[in-house]
Amino acid sequence: KIEHAKGVAMLLALEMSKFAKRSFSTKSLSFQGALYFKSINYDAGKLSDDIFMKAVRIAAVDSEPRILTAEAFAERVKTKRAAVNETYASLAKLVSLIFEEAGRVSSLAESADLPDDIALNISTQLAWLVYRGFVATVPYEKLKLYPRYFKALEKRIERAKVDKTRDRSKMARFEPYWTQYHRLITDKNARIADRAALSEYRWLLEEYRISLFAQEIKTIDRVSPDVLSRLWLTVTVS
Image 1 (cartoon, rainbow, N blue to C red):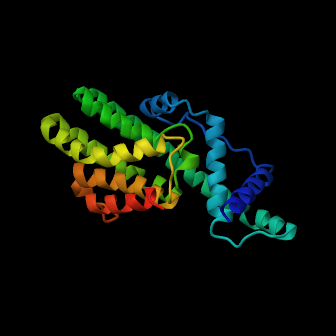
Image 2: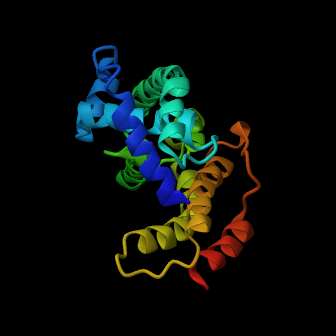
């Protein structure tokens, strides 16, 4: 079913691209946003394609009946073209905001004169949120949560400037859960029992960060060391 949806989305994108030329422009980005965009080496053309493909999935595939005939395909192109264009514009706006916020938070961290270990931890979080190809790989529902993650990072930077010991204490509480995820995801030979659970774990880590470093933002999911540990067992044990 997943592969069918991917294939249909590619065909729809190919057909719909004949009717309009889309390109993501960095000209509207601030200096900080443009600098962060440049730093991850995300080709603007590829980024535009990724936004378009995600727009097709959102507006014309994921919430629609499966396409099984040529007639149904032609009808989907005809009836969903406008919705895809609207979704593309909305996504492009969100992606621009993400680059702006990533650039702003990166600049805040650099100017805060934080110790190397804290600064590295913050830059690593940013790098795993906004990287070349993130638009294609991060679920849309999670992309919409990025402003929360950036706000939490901003709060953390503010507090770390005045209480580095406390920040390190929270970082130590978080690190074991991140380390096991990072070790698994970067191991080409890793055995993953449940990829859906792995994705859930990945994004619960961001909520756990919020619960540690910016509690006033509040988490949208219940998260704790126990919740993460139980979920991890389903990721790694078949």
